[in-house]
Image 1 (cartoon, rainbow, N blue to C red):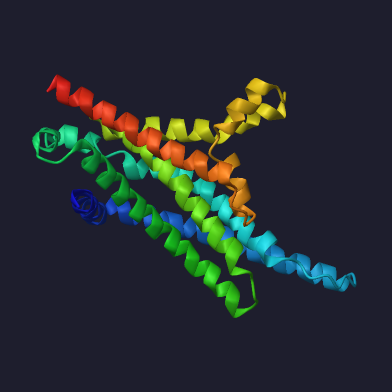
Image 2: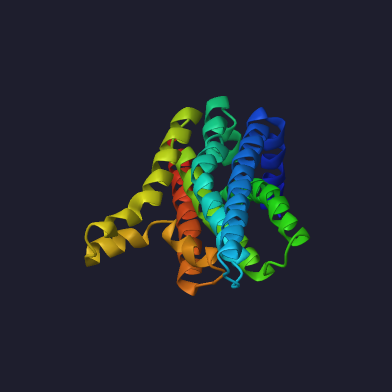
Length: 254
């Protein structure tokens, strides 16, 4: 399938760029610090409870896995715009976009290929964090199911934000503009659920529903909620659909 060929090309471009390795290094460093802090706090609290004579053990899934995955979801909001900013903007800047839109490839194949390439890159970043999680099994027996569900939620959330980032990149030829605009949109989608803290009106609840972070909460708890899955898939489809319309506009102007 041509989309997979485009995805492979995108991955080659990612790993030929120092940006990819910089993102991987920063992501591993930040998430590693989150994991270290969560484990340290867990051990400290466990020792305090033991000294107080409380025999009920603390849940490592709740105190470590859930907190770390929630923090990873927030870090993704800041890194994903850096991954998508060059998707179409660089093609426009170098002039290769004309070759793409006049090639026998369908627009859907180009868009899905670029999105898949970015998604595989994001999955690679998540794989780095999984190494930390595996070390928990050397010292305990955490439940693997909430962990898998949490990573599924991270992948869905990442897919939705990547689709939005690619859409923004298709509207400009400047990578910096695409990155800043992508970051602003991701930040907005992060804070939208704050409106319910002031007033729980129907309008505020609707606005809060659009927030990508609020839909990750059930995944972080190890629960697959159908409405959250539908939300992320809808965001992915909408982002890619609007990117296709943006490409139609480019073709018309060309």
